[in-house]
Image (cartoon, rainbow, N blue to C red; front, side, top):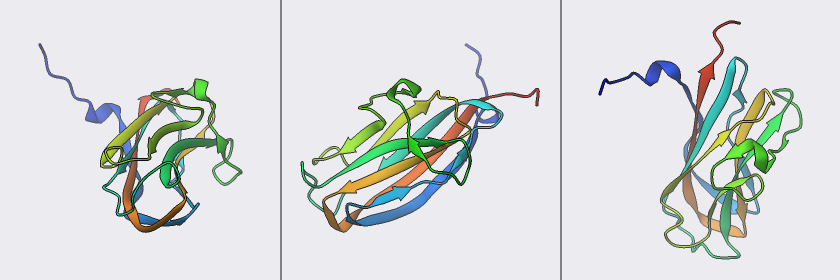
Length: 144
């Protein structure tokens, strides 16, 4: 079987540098990803081991938002535009021991030119949870 180069087929970007997120009912957003000239994108959020006890009232939901402009109002991506384990626009939930310390991924197949990841903290996160986000755009359109 021949080996193939994947690196030259993807445009990888760090959307959120590794950091510990804290707060009560707070939202952390990753950098806006410009989908111009790309027709697919894999979004990944790495959730570290939480310093708080995750439960049904203290959890983190990971989602995708889209917009027609880079600085406009972003709205939740429809579930039909996300490939992966989803519940609406949510592609991951850390809500108990074992659901943290995990990487969650989803592919965006929608039509909006600007997309970003979100991490929504529900409940009070005093000690916090390490998070990092990255994206890998693929299927580049070389004709433009």
